[in-house]
Image (tube, rainbow, N blue to C red):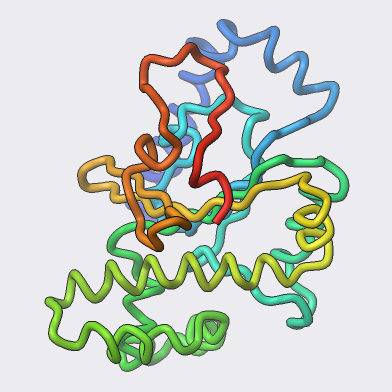
Length: 234
């Protein structure tokens, strides 16, 4: 076993010990309730990137978020070969009855960078095939942003990828049915981990704007207040 591997696992084990001693005891009521079942309000679809922590970002408790993660926060369209994403979405909506779905991309996304530079995916055939679920974004960005700096092009591609995956999400029968019945709302977000900014897509302008502005939320609202606003569904 390598020194690096031992160090990584040791850190996790130490974290478990800290959780059991310093955290679990303060939330025993919550965990006892979770032992009886789950009823998350939100399906949170995001990237596998280690820099993203949905619970930390949203300050959610265990049991609040049903999380789907993969490279590039991808949602294969309905009709794609059987996949875990479709199963997770179906379970979240049909069984858990989530009320909101958030598709959250992030800055400096390696998967989207791979879309813009396919040569960088050499030796990664599975990744390359997976990113076919976002095919066309590279051409879209090149057509409208060829003169932009590389970082700006990447940010545009990240936003367009989130919107593309929302389009795919809408093709799933459970999503389509729930939307028609007014039972769910879909949200498109992008998280910039360097400065903590979270942007939400505003359907009225077609732009990504600060999430608090998009939902017209005062940061001083009491905890637990339901968020509503013009950007609730794109």
